[in-house]
Image (cartoon, rainbow, N blue to C red; front, side):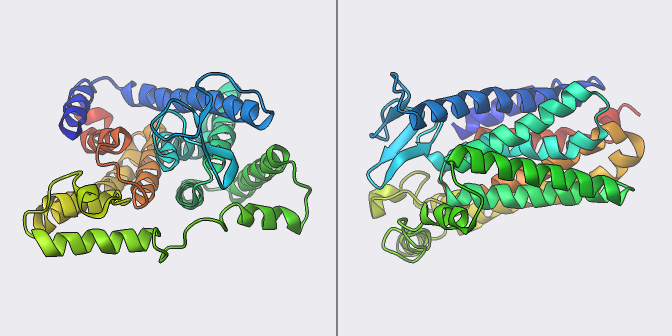
Length: 330
């Protein structure tokens, strides 16, 4: 699957030739996330109201169902069209980052509304996943995107107003969808949703799982690895960390090189962004959003095994392919 996605990504970026290609990519990313986001949001509202239709929810991980219900989570966790609710974040986080970075420089009122709606819907869907990693990734991405936006602006009043609108809108939306009054009980209820989960060092906690996976690597073949996707044969559980999965599967040398390659991509591309800002300011906000979204995906994959994540691979090749300026035309 990794090879297939890489080939698709190479074919995709090989067609980037026109000046407006990057603008169209932004439109597709935002529109796709908004479309899926609305579908998932409506599905969750139906579930909350007790309206059950085929394919809406399931109690079995391998069965069809947008919402995965657990014994200790009566409302269920939004997982969209993925197996694991933790994977939903990668489909929305890039759109949120691009929307935040593009909002202030967008002259069209209708498009600004689309960006704002995308932020609200996608953030709410991430909340519905009841994933701690999703909330952490969302918070990090919003802070990075607002920081990048702030750096790109000259008016402090504009960023203050924008930040206030975003925070107030998201807060109001969360209060409305959770039917909780504005008081400390709201925060207690929010925290209570995660109190029945495994702690990091519990038997099934993330750190425990990572330690077991690392021990498997050390006890078997630390240089060449044990092969991708084979950790469950040793520990009966997935690795729940894409970057550790790369290392355990391919060995310390090759696996670390793969991880280092992904880490280097946003660092190197951010340097290009400074030139893009001077030569193509309309591209600059898109590039900032892609970098912030990439970092968000990178962070989220610390909690889930997903080496064939198409968003990560596609954006990696997209960042590599973007040249300065106008795809090397000048």
